Length: 273
Image (cartoon, rainbow, N blue to C red):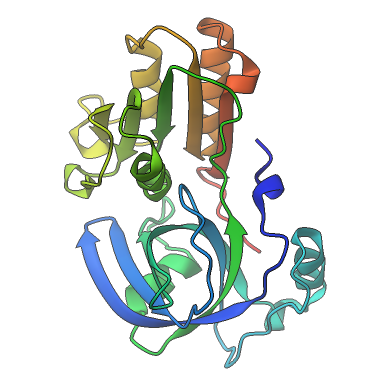
């Protein structure tokens, strides 16, 4: 799926300020940001890029270009000591009348227990801390008639799945498979009554499989799915997203056009930009 086609044509970098921090579960910190006056609420899995200062930086050096290619080329041309960290996030909630958004940060580290700059920011955030904000639009845009919806993702996909469920019509039918690190990370959110949820917690896995996304993929492969034309949206860890698409297309003979997939991240390969 080409997320770029849903990028706003007119946008500008904004500065967002932390106003609240809440540890909502063992693996999630929810930060509320203000200062986003004029942000247009786009619905579904509305996502953004956040820019954080690196250690030793006292100010954000944000790109001046805002086109999808332009800002990134300018960003890469910025010397690393001045280049901020940048990460992509889905809005968990938005209150445009207040210029506020909530963003859920997954707190996870590598095999040695080290955590990335965004997780560190979320854990240490206090009111007044600032980040750069660039609106990216939405990624969930099914473009074909379908009888039911399949949503599958890991902990990084939970905010997007919640946003999509919130915008589905009340008559929607479907299946949502969500894998989270612990049973305490399950969240409740509005969804049509016809969406059947399957929550998988890695800390409850009897075989100790700890690779993110692997349990969700296995659940999909063994699931008794509804009949009819599906629109599938597979997001999260790269192997989960690509594996789900491969299974649906090759094993269940779903049309490629009916399966959107986005690898948000890759296990064992932290982002370094």
